[in-house]
Image 1 (cartoon, rainbow, N blue to C red):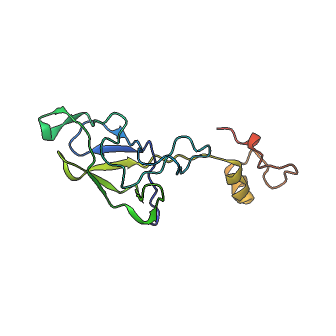
Image 2 (cartoon, helix red, strand yellow):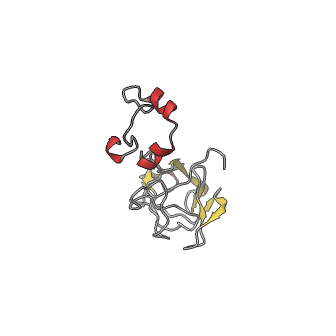
Image 3 (cartoon, rainbow, N blue to C red):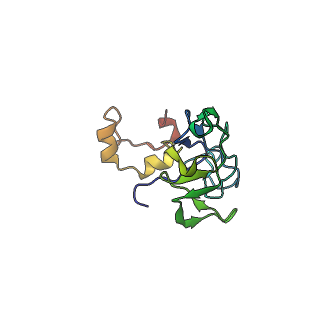
Length: 158
């Protein structure tokens, strides 16, 4: 799984035969969040997320249907990570290179173009960061000499 990201709700997907992307919507579980400090938005996607599992359920016009409107339906996922299984739905974690099958487009016609995770700086990230590296990245703030708690959330402004 080296350097592959887990996929979460909001991941952008596209179909090889469609004209527009759509965002993945996790409907099979409601407890397991990744990359989401407040556990509100980024549910972890699994191979059990099949059926109409996109926000708009369309990839625009479908070349396989003479450019009629796509009606995105996932019948199965391939390339998921076998070593993570959610207790809730027995689903295996999707990876950014997982692919989905649509009954119209065929096997692996749907790909993930963005895994959905975002960089979110938290106080825990700051506590875990190497102060010397942070001093190089952010020379305007003295991470090495700060007497107060430099990892307080008030220092994190995005």
